[in-house]
Amino acid sequence: MTSIYLFRHGLTKEAEDHLYCGKTDVPLSKKGIDLLQEEKKLVPKLSDYSIYSSGMLRCDMTVEVLYPGLAYKREPSLREIDFGIFECHSYEQLKDNPEYQAWISGCNEMNVCPGGESGIQMKERVLAFVKKILLKEKEMKLAIFTHGGPIVALMQYFFPHEHKNFYEWQCGFGQGYKILLDKKNASYEKLKFNKEVK
Image 1 (spheres, rainbow, N blue to C red):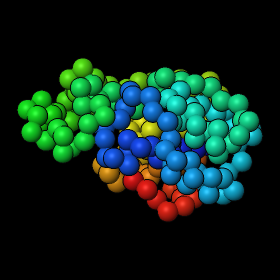
Image 2 (cartoon, one colour; image 1 turned 180 degrees about the horizontal axis):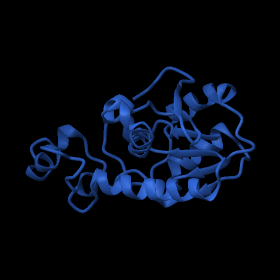
Image 3 (cartoon, one colour; image 1 turned 90 degrees about the vertical axis):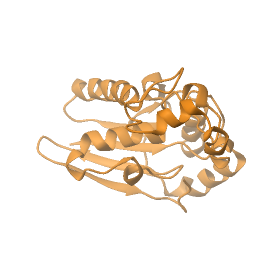
Image 4 (cartoon, rainbow, N blue to C red; image 1 turned 120 degrees about the horizontal axis):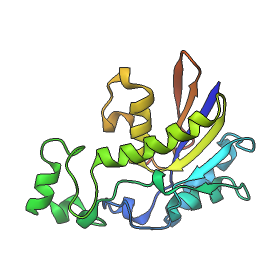
């Protein structure tokens, strides 16, 4: 049996301000740290898990707040989508921008952010890394501290029969999923440690 925890990083000031934030390396906000401190006593023990962070400051800080002293590896493949020229801008700031309207129109999974990447490109790099890790051992324990987009990509990959869209799979900041896999079955549960903040 393979056990995988997917954790979304804690709240950031950029998220509080409803900004697109992918490649920009930002820390957790004070509120984000406070919320993680509240859930510390409720999180599962990960001492025998292989721990990976996307290597972005907000993910590293989430590991370090929830699991102080626990060793982890940084893996850039687990980073959020690169929003290109839309980085650190809000919908209100972008809504009249023709390039933004072109990106959000139609299938923005396929549409490439100018100067950035598409949702499909993000999914491909996330899945390539996770598949490579899972091929190494038949049974393993893995915990991934990452972002909203990569978590959705992984849940859609492991549970395609549920036909859930991005927003149906999305979890709040500091929240996540536990996935159990064996040769024949895959199951999951949503992790909720405190009031969900999206």
